[in-house]
Image (cartoon, rainbow, N blue to C red):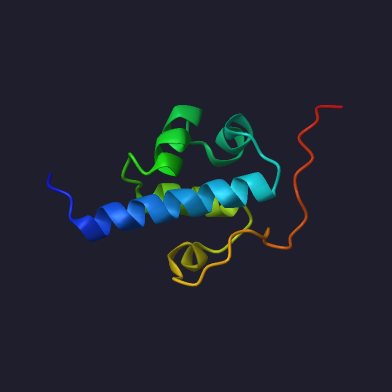
Length: 93
């Protein structure tokens, strides 16, 4: 499949936004993997913009990150801030 420049650009933007959201919530790739069902290597590839992501995966990721799917596509998206929702306590204690 030949990728258009627009598709490549959006793939990278979405990956960067997902990484920013993950970092803002203090989650590792492994944490997000457990919460979303996607493997850590897949998440890494998505965040680097080297893998196309299915809509169903985006839905799982945004649910795990407690954010809304449309926010990933907004041009003026400010992903430097968390969603304002409580974070996860992943300690097994």
